[in-house]
Amino acid sequence: MAVGADGLWIAIAPSAGAGEAGAGERRPALFLDRDGVIVDEVGYLARREDVRLIAGAAAIIAAANRARIPVVVVTNQSGIGRGIISWADFAAVEDEIARQLARHRARLDAVLACPHHAQGRPPYAMAGHPARKPAPGLLLAAAQRLPIDLRRSWIVGDRASDLAAGRNAGLAGGVHVATGFGTAGAERAAARQLAGDGFDVRGAPSIAAAATLLPLLGGHGG
Image (cartoon, rainbow, N blue to C red; front, side, top):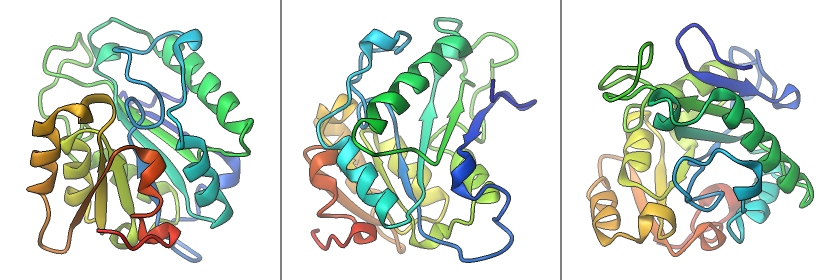
């Protein structure tokens, strides 16, 4: 298991350059929410057989891999905190996601998850935990472990809270996708309100279209 004393899941791929954050070239990263962005939102995803990649997710991750851009998943997992699913369930789902991505020659460099929630069970019963999005803790933890330049990094999410975490971490911008919880118009409106003070907000129908909007991958759309 990759769960630390703080209750966070932090798994860094051996090939991702862990431990190099203090030296070498810092590169912009592509931060991704998981449910509703990479895989279908099914509500407390706990079974391998329910893992379905969203069209275009593997392609954008593979493109980032080829460009040597770290791909980091940052995900709230209140289902664990609430006792609905277990860390073993989470690990099995992550293994299946990795397996499906590998079929497209795509891989994740890091996966970080926060189980803490106001309605969580001890030891996860905590409101406003610094790692639960919209707080930036997961992104900052990734930058402590990998040679990431947060100021040039972007995040893709289906909730405004995903983009808020990016803004709070000092990222360059975020892309809100209309999949998962992003189908609600209120989420897109709330995401757009985060634009400003050096944080760029863009909208896309799904992660498949996000590549044309991400400067990391040569996109220039607004």
